[in-house]
Image (cartoon, rainbow, N blue to C red; front, side, top):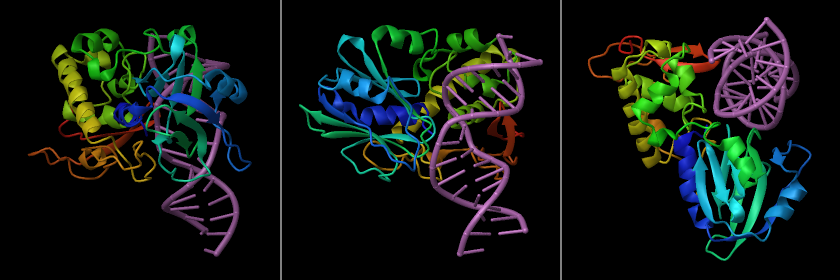
Length: 280
DNA sequence: CCCCAGTCCTGCGGGC
DNA sequence: TGCCCGCAGGACTGGG
């Protein structure tokens, strides 16, 4: 499930699209899969972007952003199973959702693939982008977050800290995997109320987020058992081999000198993993 | 403000 | 072997 490290890996993988002209956009449609939500509608989307050069490839939280002239933006939000591929064959033809033919650079084709089709593809004007993904909608990027910012934004909340970390208005980019990994690394019980965390714990949590997300970017993200997530060059990520608690229910806590076993609970309707022995 | 359930969607695995 | 059902969950919505 693409979170910050996976989406950042996608962004880097398609960085060479910057400078290319979007010559043609194609939305395959077939009767056996529902179309990916695209806004504005496909014909309008294609008419408005065809012929434009991509100014830059950026990321907004868990979304990949192609910046266009006049600060218009194409925003792809992969959600659960979305991918971008650069001059690579898609895992299945069936789930190819959009292709952009490119000219003026090395890459020739950008493909958007999504097995489950929960992702979205949007074209925003500068004003629409500011409204939908500006600072009031999206908190500071988790890679640039300071302890002060995190505590200021969540410190008064009575929500469970694990649930609060997923709030994209508070901080952008963290999802289920990296929230539970960071809480384990900072030895904080995910069920605890934000309001009960000490300044020291906010600092440890912020540092853990930064370290884990940075490391996960270095490994090009996490490819889970379903094998869905791949980089733009069609290879698996590697950080799944470094998960310490995520999806490891019943296994021994990896911390040295801790004899606890990892438990699974549901918080905010999401699977949450932690070691009850060393996360207090 | 916060919480919860439901929605979107497809593939997979368990149960029978 | 095959069918049904539940589950996975990021973001959003509507009701309490």
